[in-house]
Image (cartoon, rainbow, N blue to C red; front, side, top):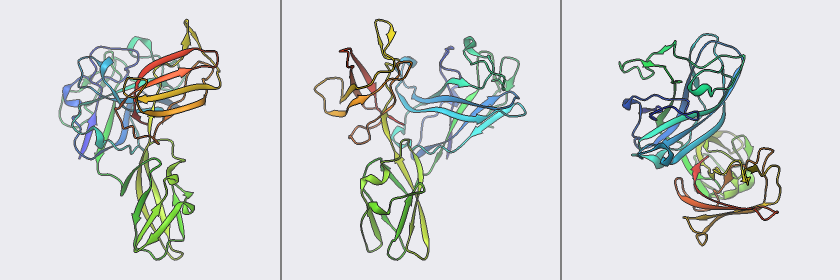
Length: 330
């Protein structure tokens, strides 16, 4: 079963560029769904562009309270030669944990579009542009609904699909794979040699240590190829990576960004209290030239998507910042 997630946020904001307000476009997620494709409408142009998008649980009275479930940055696309929908594939994030939630999607940080749309928020470019109020978009769902008028809207939607990988594993976990080959002599995961992580094999089952997925930084489905010297078998593995995207970006002190810092300490604890179980700690974090922290990978902890956590930041200059965050699939 395929499902569509549009953006049903009421009103217009600079950070919510893709807004499809019809209630039919807001999906209550069914069982076993995974992220499949993203569609964005662009007028004719040339070159390439990027954007960020996020998927939220919209079952809250105001969007500011809606927890973010999935966040993707710098998604690239090619501006079409003729105006129309651009389809971006290659996603495979496991969304089964969000079954039963009514979801909505937003697009932000667009690059490669002309300055069109909500509050003039889209970046200037010589490439193509997002649809504007002179364009009426056809119903993207093919279900006979009234076409979407584009006044103050920029069409964008997400597609999910049922079905998953052969195996679903948390990053860093140890797992077994059942095969029908002879003795396994080769193993690659996402084209990387992982045979050195085989801990045992017997009776058609090979066991891998948790280090097999350590190099994977974002959630997705990857191929595990096993070989016995004569032939190979390929299995798909959904690797789920859990992280915290700091909301205090850029980090500031008295209104000024704490830019280009090194040796920053960050401690993340479960729940809303400092005495919660430690989820993450590092004393070597940095900020970029704008004062932004990188996404923090918390997969080695037991934290799950949508878990609330408390993040405490301490700089070498003694500046302390505390914020409440939410664990996400990254």
